[in-house]
Length: 80
Image (cartoon, rainbow, N blue to C red):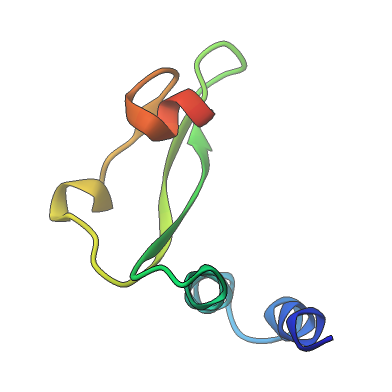
């Protein structure tokens, strides 16, 4: 029930950036991770989608902040 309450609070408060950052922190704590990154589709077309980091909790390599990840590029790209 607490997790559902936290999700409701995520949907109800603050800007999208603030809500995503809060959700990254909740997710990291939920799974016992030091860091969590939320990546969302950013641009590209149907055959070449791209995503980028939109929210973080914990350490993140500087190069990842502005990176645009495409199909098959690294672990994130394989998930895409």
